Amino acid sequence: METYLRFQTPLRCENTARPLGIFAAAGQVETSAHVDEVLRDWIGETLDWFGEHLHMPDLGGHGWRALFWFRCGSRRMIATMWELVAAVRDAGVPVQMQRTYEPGRIVYVDEHQVAAVARRRRRCPRQRWSALRV
Image (cartoon, rainbow, N blue to C red; front, side, top):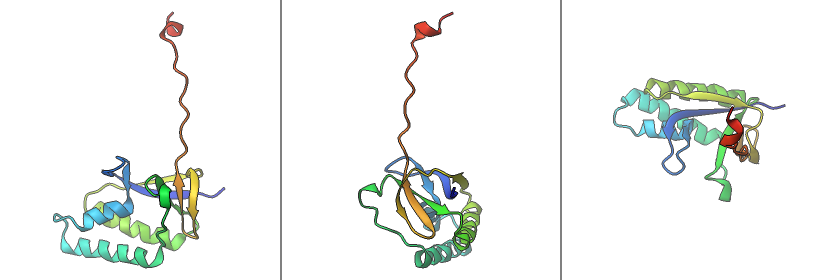
């Protein structure tokens, strides 16, 4: 069973209110006036590297719902991701790594990543208060 990794922050997306992934958060940090020039350059160079080495697919109608996950076998991408994580953390933004075997319904896959739409959770039937009385 393949393992997938996602790096996200407590910052929120304006459109969906979901936690921002590392790339969006790094972009915000890079343009922030409160970040020193050396850190801004480091983040910019790392984002440029990903721009050259990681394909950004057009997901069509799934784009706003899909989350990207790295495939664990993509060691060079993940190693460079840890460099970006360190830079974003140095700017004061916490970054959390999530690991899963089930990222959701996969709508895109390449050698380094997958994009997946979360499966809808089934709601538990509501219990009646009368059934809970002793």
